[in-house]
Image 1: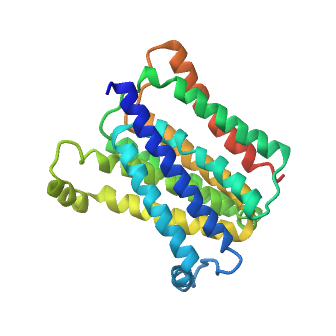
Image 2 (image 1 turned 30 degrees about the horizontal axis):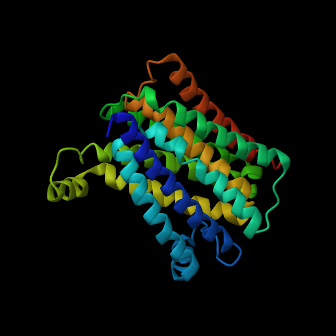
Length: 287
């Protein structure tokens, strides 16, 4: 199998991961009205209630399988490409939220979904160009994480953003995006190592715990945002942030490069920009 076909195969694994993760999020949203929000002073009580709920627990299990496939895709494909392919989960979530949870979608929201599909097609046509990447630049990655955390915290200063669920959705997306970058840094250990060596190195690698913490925080923030806003808005807003962070981080901290072919490079850039723009459009449609 040549490099372009191998890359396409791993990105297909990323698509499967996005389907499973979207399904898990849909189940989580369906339980938002019955489960308590995780507020200051009651976080552990709320987490206990969530874990005791069979539907919510099943949703997390589905998410776990999707995340495992996501790690497989990350291990052999550039993080920025996988991040864009994962945005197919937005379309899946929005369609099923409208059909099963009876959340209304405006013409603008359907246009955003169509734009994401176009972006996915553009990305597929850019695969022949390849995308070089290297090991994580730790100082740059840590600096990016600090900046991203500041961006995630800022919306909580606005009472409107807090009460609408937008602040929690943004924070969840930033946390998930950082989790992607930390997971990509962790996969650097996986190459050319035996199974036992992989396990030992993974357990001793701080990136494992950084990725785990980021994803747990993202999950809590996302479930909290489900209490205050429509899932059809929360999902794109969170996903837009979780997409932007890996794209910026992939180039800044992992040395990912655009294809040398001008057309492929244009399609790649267009796919990145269109995905983020479409997600942002969906996220602001409620206004």
